[in-house]
Image 1 (cartoon, helix red, strand yellow):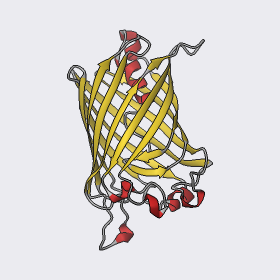
Image 2 (image 1 turned 45 degrees about the horizontal axis):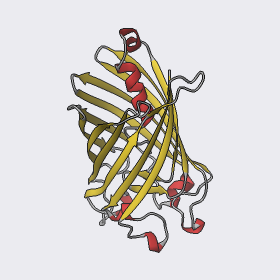
Image 3 (image 1 turned 135 degrees about the vertical axis):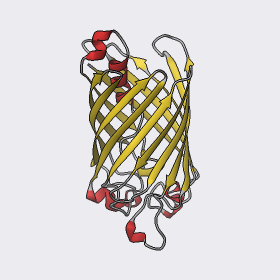
Image 4 (image 1 turned 180 degrees about the horizontal axis):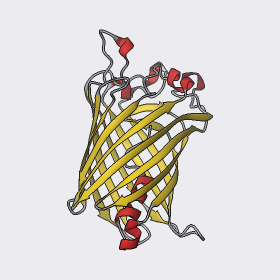
Length: 278
C-alpha cells in the first residue's frame, strides 16, 4: 500500500505551497521511483525482498489549499529467500493504488482528507493468507509545524472490508546539516494503532489486518533529501532513508511464512527515492 509521507507527495506540496505567487497558482505534478529493501505496510511485511515502487501525483492550488490525485505501484524484483516461504510472490507487479486528496493550510497547521483504493494481485494476497487488502479507505491526516518539530496524527477508516480504523501518531524533528547539498536530516518516531482492525476470533471470516487491537508497531526512521541538478532534470532530488521497526502485534512480527520468522521482535528497512517535479 502507498505509504503516507512519500517523497513525491512532499515535492508536490513544495511546488504548490512554496515559492512565488505564480508558482503557487499553477498546476503541479511530480513523480518518483523508490528502491526499498522490503515492503512493509503499517508494520506488516508484504514482501521481505527488494521492491521497486513508483508514484505519480498531480495537484492544483486553490486559495489556502490544494487538491491532489495520484497513483502508486509496487513491483517485486525477486523472490525472497527461501522462495517457498516468501511473503509475496516476487518478479511481478503485486499492487497498485489510486487516491484523491484535499489539503488545507492554516498557518502552521496542515490538514488533509482523502480516499485511497487498494488493488492487490490475487496471488500476492493469497500468499499472505487474506484478500482483505483489496479495499478502500477514507483518511484524515493532520500535522503542525513548531519550528523544527512536527507532530502528526492520521486516522484511516476502512468501511468496505475490515470496517475498522488504523491510527498513526508521529513526531518528526529536523536537524540542519552541512554541506548545503544535504540541507537537513529528518528523524522521527511513529506509533501505529489498530482500532477495530484486528481479526475477530469469534468470526475469522470477517477478515482483519492485526492479531489484536492496540499498539501494532513503533517505527524509528531517519532521512535526508539531496538536490541533484542533472542536465534537464534540474528539479531532481534523492531521498535516502533508514527504518528500524519494533514489532508489537503478532501480525507485524511475522516477516515470512517460515516458522522461524513468526516472532521477529525487530526489523530494518533501507530505501532511496528519486523524485522529480515540474
